[in-house]
Amino acid sequence: MAAEVLCAAGAQVHVYDAMPSVGRKFLLAGLGGLNLTHAEPFDAFITRYAERTQACAAWLKAFDAQAIRAWVQGLGLDTFVGTSQRVFPTDMKAAPLLRAWLHRLRHPAQGAPVTFHMRHRWNGALQHNASAPHPFHLVFDTPQGPHTTEADAVVLALGGGSWAKLGSDGAWQPWLSALGLDVAPLRPANCGFDVQGWSAHLATQFAGTPLKAVALSFTDSVGHSFSRRGEFVVTATGIEGSLVYAASSLLRDEIARSGHATLHLDLKPDFTAERVLKEMQHPRGSRSLSSHLKSRLHLTPLHLALLHEVLSKEAMHDAAQLAHTIKHLPLTLAAPRPLDEAISSAGGVRLEALDERLMARAMPGLFLAGEMLDWEAPTGGYLLSACLASGRVAGTGVAEYLNHYD
Image (cartoon, rainbow, N blue to C red; front, side):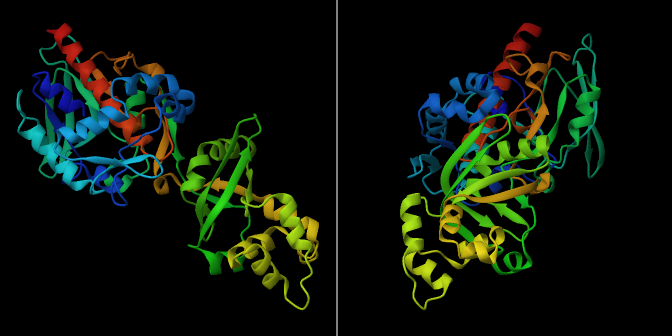
């Protein structure tokens, strides 16, 4: 996106990519349908960036959800808004969009074509000499050996640390710290969690089973709360999936503070507590408890397994205690899953180290964009929206810097 802005501004742009082909992570994001952005009102949209709302809102004001849809249309594709207000290309796929985008970059209507250099991995070598004709000197590792290049300005968009196999391995953290930039440690975001003590029965019999139409609520030790309906998946070690990802930042930070985090599940959010208790107190005759729960409340084997995780045999036969747990089932989480399993990462170069153009205060002419910056967002189009918008901010910043530099 930064390259597109700079190409249109008349700059000569070279993109160096560690992968064999362009946009590997972009294509991966589109495997289940490319969720480009979200159609909710802007005032609600920007709250998804938590403590970085102000900074991300500044990026997105110049390139909001509607602007992203118009940009896609300019590439010859249409978009639609799904039932959840998520925005997708009409065919749901990332590849046609990426092909059209790369074609426009390589064959622009105006400006010089963008040149792509594949299998060029920056190795951390960067020298800056403000008095040189081309102030930046960088070294890339390639299959043919080291490659050196010079530039008037540099944009780094190195990703976070959650997709090492696609190049986003976070190796840049010590390199940028050495250049004088303040870097917050990378942490998993939109991630799954390990539960404190799954039984062998649940781990072996229900791993991979979705838990649908439940409500998850959580309040951390500093008063932040989360409550939402949705679904997630039970794993061999814990839980993962969209509803868990939505609460993951609060859960992760609470585990860091307290060593654990306890959330509560409402297994029957459409039933009042009074109705659940009434159904539990209904005579069951000769039926087993599991048959009774299935008949009266439509509880599944997974529901029953979860209840057995937290209730003793005696408690399972206490109607009041069982009814309460169906509405407030506690799950204590011990740890987030490893960073490389996460959808995205938090942490990175602190925004305070950059100016409003995303230029490093410690090194004029060095710009940064995307997930390597210290912000995070839930899934739903928010991640990709802010990445695209930050790229445009950085590209515009470079154009302004070069005009002043010249």
